[in-house]
Image (cartoon, rainbow, N blue to C red; front, side, top):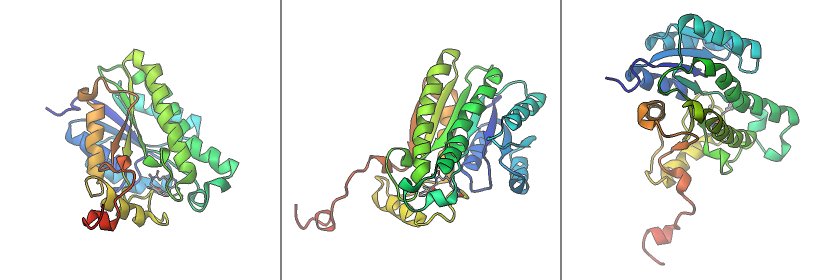
Length: 268
Ligand code: 0WE
């Protein structure tokens, strides 16, 4: 029997077949979960619908997470088809492209607020509305973060600040909702080529550095995030909450590297 048999997951933030949300959806489907999706805007519908169909999802709705009315409508529609929700997956982030280039010090008030609203507050807004549906034996919330929350990466800028806030929000939500047996966790995924990373200047350098320096000497795949998500959503993780789980081939633990001479045993 699958680890998520009889469970329903709502996945917010699917964009296309490269999305980490799609890795999670496929892994959940393989473990027997029933899936539901929401996507950001009309331009994504023609990509998201066929994917949803592939994993047998009937519920596919558009929802702009910046609008309370659309969030309310999303959950009203969800309730028409499902009487319970077991897993809320938040795979949403956005900053203006111009804020993801150059210096963090140049971030505008507007750009800061936009990144925080879409990438952080949306987790709170979705969780609020999911609460009354969390009536099953092991409900949980899962979001996606990045090591740019803890350490600086060129150009990640305001998204790093937003991810730091997101990880703190995971802890505060976990604290609030724990007494109701609702768990809240994050996966800190290594860099993966997706729509969210396409056209980011220097992204390939980040991938190259992970391959060179991560303890496991490789990059991660979409499916690795799916596997970790299955664990966190399943009863195996029944006592795991407020946690950020790194799925990054160990990259986040590495400080300095040895120089070439030391590596090759020439000197000490
Ligand atoms: O969180 C992210 C990316 C999120 C993201 C991506 C975009 C691209 C297009 C948020 N907003 C936008 N806005 C757009 O207009 N990642 C973890 C992937 C990522 O993005 C980077 C990275 C990595 C890794 C940006 C700069 C440097 C590294």
